[in-house]
Image 1: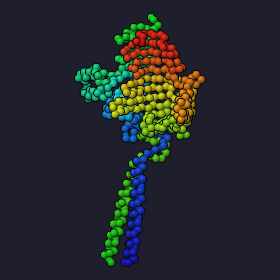
Image 2: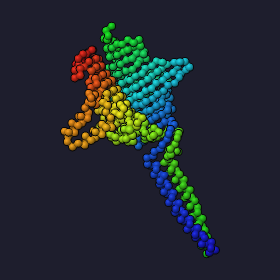
Image 3: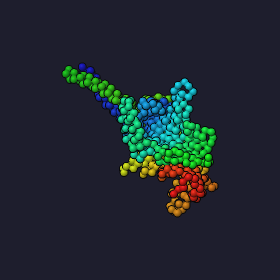
Image 4: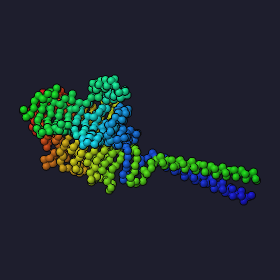
Amino acid sequence: MSDSLDELRAEVRRLRRTNAVSLCLVVVALGAGFARGAQPRTATFDEIDVGRLNVREPNGTLRLALSNKARLPEVVIGGKTYPLRGGTGVGSAGLIFFNDEGNENGGLVFQGARTGSGPTDYHASAHLTFDQFDQDETVALSYQDASGRRRAGLTVSDRATTPIAAFAESAMALRALPEGPERTRRMQSLRANAVALGGASMERVFVGKQADRSAVVSLADAGGRPRLRLVVDSLGTARVEFLDEAGRVTSRLPSP
Amino acid sequence: MSERSDRLERDVRFLKLYAVTTTVIMGVGAVAAFRRADPPAAREHAAHEKFTEIDVERINVVEPDGKYRLVISNRPRSIGPIYKGKPFGYPGGGRPGLIFFNDEGTENGGLTFTGKTDANGSATASTHMSFDQFNSDQVLNLDYGEEKGKRVIGVSVNDRADVDIFEWVRQRDSIMKMADTAARAAAMRQLTAPRNGVPFVAQRMFIGRDPARNAVLNLSDPNGKPRLRLTVDSLGTARIEFLDPTGKVTQTIGEPRK
């Protein structure tokens, strides 16, 4: 009995020691594990396949998203997300940029797909756009191609000085309506009031080629009406044109 | 005696149970801690990984020898200028976006974007894509810039003298350390002076919308002086102007400037 009692005492001592040691080890391991979560982590890969990559500021604000079509982020205006892309068939993939306040301020997006079996049954586009602060596209480098009707070039636009949020809100309200005459009427009204709501774009400069296969430099007034135009048309004829507000050519070089 | 040994046995049973339970709990906790810190395969060098979505503060695309090819970053982790793999000029932290590098690991362009409102509600914003001359600086830019309501939007093309940017920055930094202000100013003038008749930098072309709200196309001579200017001003008046090297208009087509 005394022997087994001594054995028991020894076992208790052993267990106490084991407990203390394992407790220490596990606490150290736990601490190290959780501490690593808070430290900067870097990893090296030869190649990454990804549906979407988010570059975020330390506070979590999205700065850039590089995405496939399915995961392209929704528009963020004034800190609010607008589901304007989902289901609308925008259908582009690429990069979307966000400013220091987390609002969208540009992107580089591209798409292209066949729409049928004919040689011109396709649509394709690529856009690099920079947005005016709290507004929309002010610089665009674009290629747009609808079944062989192509426009490619640089566009510089004036935007409203008021934020585009009011226009976005109206557009969202409109999208919630069912198809019908009421929606059509409201759509027309939204377009007519685009300037007041800050949703209008006045193209001031275009340089590139037009759908009619002319190469042009076009300078427009503050209302977006072209007033001075350099053109080499699809037949190779060159001309410089001055235009009035109504779009009539008032003078041209060389003189006709 | 028998009572004491019974108690001892109970103690031992309790201690055994305690040891097993705490070890299991702690073990699970430790595994959880490491898993939280480490998404699968994030630590080791992985050849090809597949993710649905990744959140990151910076991505470096590197060549097999480790040289940068492209850095995509948020603001604080953004990279400063790099010349043949060496940082120079100024520290990083102010260029959120994409920075490009050539085959020698020297910066050769980028696409950066910023924008915020200050305490008075005034916005400062810029989006800037630039392509750099080899071992030099920007020669083609696509810009939107806004400060205190003034906006510049458009494309510029620049001529640059054949000056190595790393050497130029080294010289500039040593000039900036000069105590004699007159000598320092003279040295800076010399540093930015034309080389063999070629200006240090000269804008040859701008097309876009200027701060005065004109839509303009400027074509300039090698000294950066506009010589042919197409303008549609903020009132809608259109003109073509030919200018001499001093900036004087020598001929106007369309309505003359008032």
